[in-house]
Length: 356
Image 1 (cartoon, helix red, strand yellow):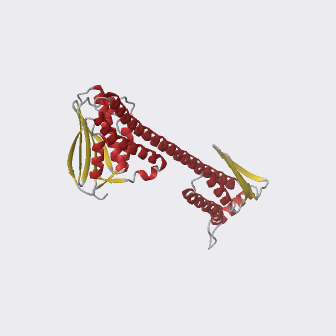
Image 2 (cartoon, one colour; image 1 turned 135 degrees about the horizontal axis):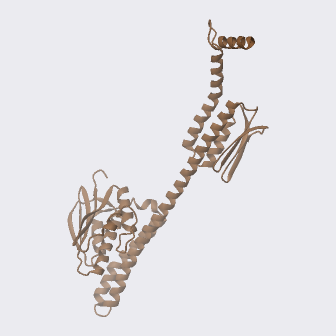
Image 3 (cartoon, rainbow, N blue to C red; image 1 turned 60 degrees about the vertical axis):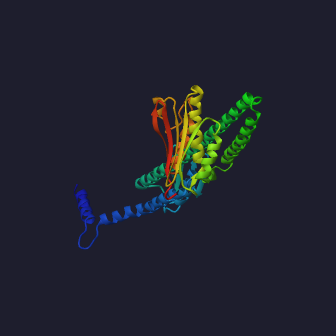
């Protein structure tokens, strides 16, 4: 008992500073810091690496190679999904860490103390969390890409469907008026077929060069004249407001909005021939394209999801309106329902052209 008391007394004296002696506590603290500093440096390296490396397997490869610079590490191996690799040399001392599809094995030069073993498990956990985050980020990017492809295909399908409807109208006119009014029929075909051909070519161009299509512009007056010509024979009333000369408009956006809105109104007319369709356009410092019909209002169940996503609808409010609204938002415009009462259903595409 006396021996134990003497040992404890000596330790207590040695632990605390006395007469300029720093004490064992200082040496113990330095030991802990000497362990922690290399780990801290590797963590900084891992954090910086995660900012520049997008592929999960490359992140594991580079981060594992960085572990070889730690003073206790002889080498190691890793496996992440279908990828694997190794670094340094093997030894009889090792520590393993596994999270989801990632496995890390680190070979050390000497057997690990409990403190070092805890540190290595912490490093493995952090590396695993970074890897899982990169995997999720990669999957999200893939999902975003697939969604973009799907939405582009849906928009192209919608555009082609509108073109086919225009061709169907021309075919109906041929069947109806081929013998009675051949002159007017030829004039109609001469006006409409080049327009349909041009629109079809534009749709094909979107598939081949989708990244450049949104940047196409057309003078407001030229676009409005061409747009009126397209629907001149469809019983649509056009009203022209003030148009400032030389103002460019994003052609794809206004083509998409105009076609979708008028096609939706024409579908209503198929159900009720008395439905009137009016289109108004003005372009100065601000621009507005408005399409109104005298039909029934948009049902409440469709209105709730309008412009927020594709809406299952037999009346034409499906993917087209959603895609056009998204394109308008991206380009700094807005597409909205400005009136929704019986006999006055109006949609408007608006934008401020100052600074554009």
